[in-house]
Image 1 (cartoon, rainbow, N blue to C red):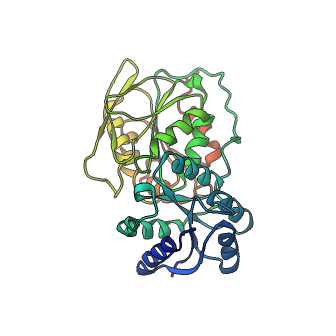
Image 2 (image 1 turned 90 degrees about the vertical axis):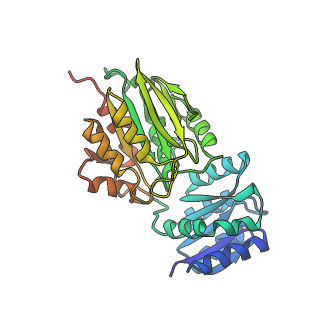
Image 3 (image 1 turned 30 degrees about the horizontal axis):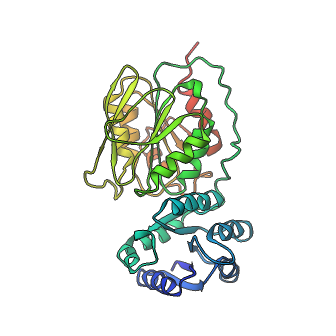
Length: 345
């Protein structure tokens, strides 16, 4: 049975979360009212997973995650307010080593969390499969790519990721030279309200001009879009080196929306220029069909290796299709992408 520590400064919220987890078959071995107590509980009980509030007295969730990763590395799922400040704090916690997060409905301590009980149990169970030490911070990427190359014209890159993905996506995008002139489509499993802030972070940390996707948006070289939470992102048109984006809310695929497969499959159908697909860390099999479609369209395909993945689910399923050209660790992914668009000779 999965063993969890629940950390939240609200006694009511600790009780609600613990009841949900216990009802879902997770044993709550300890509760803590702030970050300091949470760090101590992890040291005392050695749980499989921790749920962590963000805003707490004495030591907040971000500081607690950093301390846990230093002293007793354990998968942490953040419970975050559905606000701009909550999103920023969540990304900071992910940067410090948290593996996933769940947005609190309405952004406040509320019984509405009970309505998301299944999602909470699923996140907690999935997190137990994560390796919290798999990816280092992204402020200083290990690789430096020589931008002095001749590149193919109008290349398109589609990146798909889930659990543990934000840190790796930041690492990859920050390593890509603007001279490559890529059109970049990012599909990160993430709820609405967080994807806009994620796009802003990527924009600050890369040479590319990054925005959250909007219906009808067109993007050209040196630009990137992040699929909007709760919307599938399709490539609806391609011409003169520019992609046209369509957002739709058809049924969730693989239980998620946005789905990696939707973007990759429509890119394979629509883009007639150079096309590269990358699948990164995450749970499930979203992206496998997309990799097959892009390979069938003579595109290049890359998967993250097991050792550097927080969760080796999405890349593993893609590799099993036999359609992945190369498997690379996170800190070599930028170079692997650039290798697919270098002009031969």
